[in-house]
Image 1 (cartoon, rainbow over the protein chains, first blue to last red):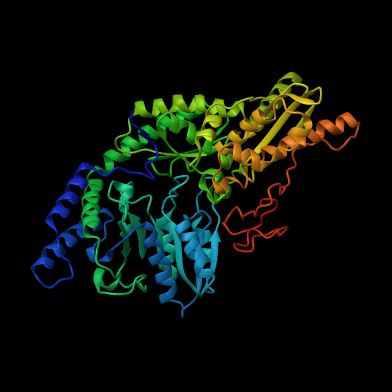
Image 2: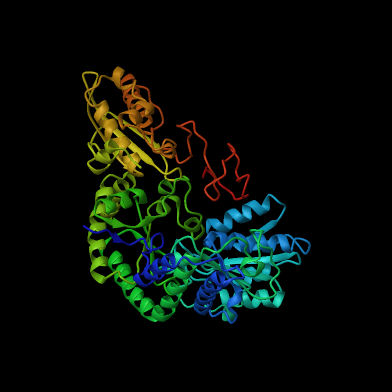
Length: 399
Length: 170
């Protein structure tokens, strides 16, 4: 039986068109885009075409502003460290939020060891940042604001445009980690008012191992990798041309299919959310009800732990992700779930369900059916559930 | 990630459920650290006649509880007191390293249940062996800040790395 992938955030298949383009590129044996001879010319043209396609996806007016990297993680590291190092004389203060991805958190942790100071703004129960908190956090020595576009655990989409207006007024460089948004929802770097924006190809059916960083002209930033003059001197190292070509095709398809993919995902999200609420008691849907990714549902199943759910679903050939501390291997509850006010036990039982363009209503139905059984099996073993049921029975008996 | 024995016990857990009128109860862990286990025993002729468990936790935690009940059932109190977290992990053909921290608490819960039984028999009234909400270091391993993954300093109210308040979170 084939595996039902409801973990698209982790694993997106390559689209057939992307596969074909990449295989074609391998067979073509491209030269080095930096070469001055004919072998290089052809490669440079293919690189340029991919850059234009990717620029189109984020509505960057100048394709040169797109820099290809190895991953979303590299893009984020480049943006944050590059700005921090290039602007250290101006100041060493950075503003961020409490629910950023580890790529941001750990980059900032490294910078803190180099005497950079970080102010982290809170989020509300839906995971939303209040732009005025960002404005208040900006000081004279603030050199960078870095806020994610959408959250990878709860899907909430931040008011980036409003924050962009604030950073433009205050003349502070603004980086947006849009790894989970680019290719999924419309992103317009001009409208958002960002200086820097990170994204990755594997989030929109492109290959893993390729990412992008939008760098608006005039942004003061250092390269992360020093060396040759590739990527307009912004990212040294011979380009991963085959991956980049794949990313270009995936970007073009994402632009074309965006509206269809969003409508399709929204319907599935509604079916899934309603199904969860109707079938299983004691669940909490995380994230903002409207301002959130259409392809992601985050649910905390009370009284049980997520890894057990994932393993049991895997036995039924269904792949989902959990934000349980046990499964993460780090033995820590998710900082995102704690930040939106979930307690430790509820955070432990949290599943992140992400679907794609090929997911069907029948897939969601099957998932709901299996999940209902799995949840009950695990709850029957749980001391928290048994206790809660006893208290409920006593409450009924008393009244 | 898990051994076949772990998966077997996780998928087909033995002796699940709360016990009515148990002779001894042991409860360990808390959701902050990840796992909670309750072990119930019935004792007859100085042997563990019946045993059951309830567990909130990952696959490893459930497998630990399940195999523990099999290991203890029918044993004399003396023999059962020799069961350790280490012998439980060995019976499961090993556990992933990061699971030894929180999930492998079964033997602690069993020993607590036995102590509870012996206390009752001797007429010693201790405070109910209820699960403490405070974090207890049963396992002797380090704990980590829940917000960043840096090792927490014992008794420190804030994380030395990220500066956030931890209460009893670590």
